[in-house]
Each structure stands twice: as structure tokens, then as C-alpha cells.
Length: 406
Ligand SMILES: Cc1cc2nc3c(=O)[nH]c(=O)nc-3n(C[C@H](O)[C@H](O)[C@H](O)COP(=O)(O)OP(=O)(O)OC[C@H]3O[C@@H](n4cnc5c(N)ncnc54)[C@H](O)[C@@H]3O)c2cc1C
Image 1 (cartoon, rainbow, N blue to C red):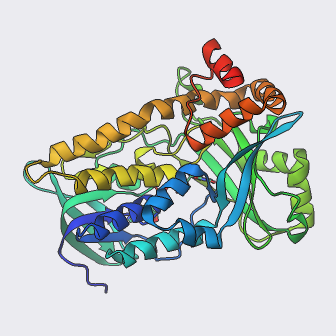
Image 2 (image 1 turned 30 degrees about the horizontal axis):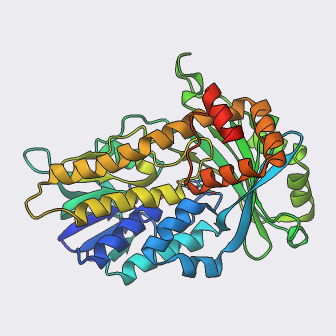
Image 3 (image 1 turned 90 degrees about the vertical axis):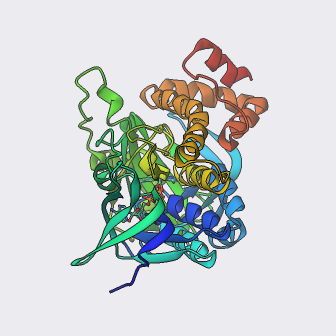
């Protein structure tokens, strides 16, 4: 049995991008950090594997961008595909299987001084008499282990079980679901070079994608975001869309997807996973504990991108701890973290509004039509992707005018 220390300054639950990013920054600043995950190093995560500019920014801060880019497939454009045309938007992009990316991130955290323990599951929070979290009860096989910590960071992703047992879950249902497969198709190398986002009729309320990975492999999938809120006001029921049927329809309908499957070989299962978006669905903190990454709903609605945002929220929590004044109490540290999330919230809300574009494919067609005729608009869209310009509310007249005319 692995021997965990009985005490640490920081206990991080979950070694995805959020957990590992926080671990690295805290450990290199001299904090004693223990990170655990129910799985061992090298686990896979169902994902599109796309790294957009926010992920590049976080990886730069972590000092890991060059190493990641050495392994990743470099991509220069996001291709937005409408029903009649497409437009390419420039950005710093890359694609790398999560199995590799997440292992690099964990090892980077360990190199920074984090103690990592795999195969250990979080069961519940340890609390003092006032209800402050002072550690966690963990499980390794038959054995229950207690570890005390000044801070617990919950980075357990979109599956809500840990949020629930930590008494942080406000909504069990995810905002979205997505499904992906890997296809090895060397003949398609050079024919699919962009990260393709396809607004297809069959993917209403979501989209299909094909992303080129290294070594002639492609990540193909579909997602529906809003599977929870879609029917809000109509009984809040989940959409009954069948993701596998949508995937099959995407392949039948989109010529690049059809060619990929005809010429290539499926080398993975076709697997789905939930998504938690818009900084909703969970409390962000309670005394002694902060929720980071997708557990806090850090994935963007509309695009489903969440790797960069998971790391960004993790860095906010890490910075709140590191920058604490000696006279600052834990509530002030949490307030600083939550203020950081609140500052991000308007952008999340715009993505939530923009998500409606999937229900109105004609709107995507109009934007693509204009963008192909207007370089300034393409530059503006690239700014939105890089998060250097604000999309505005895309569903107001002012917002549409702003997108189209700057
Ligand atoms: C099909 C699909 C495609 C996607 N495509 C993209 C994309 O192309 N680009 C992008 O940026 N985002 C994408 N996303 C979103 C992205 O996967 C998430 O935003 C990201 O993984 C969140 O990182 P995280 O560190 O918060 O959580 P995760 O990466 O989910 O890590 C959570 C970790 O916590 C561990 N854990 C959970 N519960 C426990 C427990 N009780 N005890 C111990 N450990 C526990 C898990 O084992 C896991 O290692 C996609 C999502 C899906 C479902």
C-alpha cells in the first residue's frame, strides 16, 4: 500500500489539467503539495484534444508550452464549416492526445515538487467542528486513509460524484455531452489540416469536429451543449438526443468525415463523456476548500473548450493562496479566488448566449458569408479566439453589428 503523508499544506484531488497546473505553481512556490487521482499516471480522458490560445497561455505560464508543442500537431487555423461554405480563422492552436498531455502535466507538477499518488479515490471531506474542511477521507482498495491539509482543491472534472460528497454540487446534470473516436488515416494527412468545427443540421444544439493529431491520426466527434438547459422553462428535462445517431449522421453528411472513415481505420472505441460549463452547477468554495477546473463548470459553452480554462481557474486558486498576506484569513483567500472567477463570468455568459448559434445554422452561414468577404472581420474573429477582443452579445442587434462590422 502507498504511504501518503498524514498531513500536507495543499491537497489536490484530481490530476487533470486543473489539478496538475495548480500543483506545479503551488509546489514551485515552496508549498507542500500532495495530489491524488483515482487513476494512475497515463490515464486517458475522452476529449477532442484541441489546444486553443487560452491553453497555450496557461502552458506558457507553467513553462511547459515548448515541450507540449514538440509533441503536438501544430495547427494554424480553426475552420468554421457552415451549410454552404467555410471560413478559416487564424490562431495559436495544437492537438495532442490527452493521454500524453495530461501525463506531461502531472510529471511537470512532480518535477516542481508535488507528491503524486495514483489509484486513490476521494471519498469525502474531513471537517472540523465548525464545518471547515481540514483534509479528506480517501480510499485505496480496501483501505481508508485520512490526510489533513490546510487547503483542499477539488479538481475532479465533469463527473459530479466528488462534488456531491464534498457538499459542493448544485446541479447533478451536466450542460453537455460529447463523443469522440480516433481514426488512423494517413491518406487524409494534408487534406485535413485545420481544426474543423462543423455546424451541421444533424448536430443542432451542438457541432461536429475533426482535429488532426500527430502521426496520421484524427480525432472526430460530436457534442451537444445545453443538454440540460435546452428545455429550461419546459420542465427542465434533458434532451433526448441520441449522440451516437448524431455521430453516424455527421459521418454520413459531412464529406470530410465520410472520407476519413472510408479511407481510415477506427483505432479506438467511440466514447462519450459529460461537460460542465458556464461556471455553473457547483459552489466555488467553502471554508478550507476551493473547486477548480471543470468541476467548477470551467468549460466554455458553445465551443466545449475547457482544457485552457481548467488551467486558468486552477492558476487563479493557486495565486490566491500564494499571494495571501500573512494576516489574511482563509475566507479572504477564497474571496480573492471567487473574485477572479466572477471577473471571467461575463465572458462565459457570452459563450452561453453564443451557444444559441447552434440552433440557428443560418446565423453561422451569415457570419461565414461576411467573414469570407471581409478581412477585418476575420481578424476580429481571430481576436475573439485569442480572447483579445470581446464578441459582445451576439444575440443583440448591436452584437451582430459588432461581429460583422467591428
Ligand atoms: C468529448 C469531449 C471533447 C472535448 N474536447 C475538448 C477540446 O478539444 N479542447 C478543450 O479545450 N476541451 C475539450 N473538452 C473539455 C475538456 O475535456 C475538459 O474541460 C477538461 O478535461 C477539464 O479538465 P479538468 O482538469 O478540470 O478535469 P479532468 O481532465 O476531467 O480531470 C479530472 C481528474 O479527476 C479525477 N477524479 C475524478 N473523481 C475523482 C475522485 N473521486 N477521486 C480521485 N480522483 C478523481 C479523474 O480521474 C481525472 O483524472 C472536451 C470534453 C469532452 C467530453
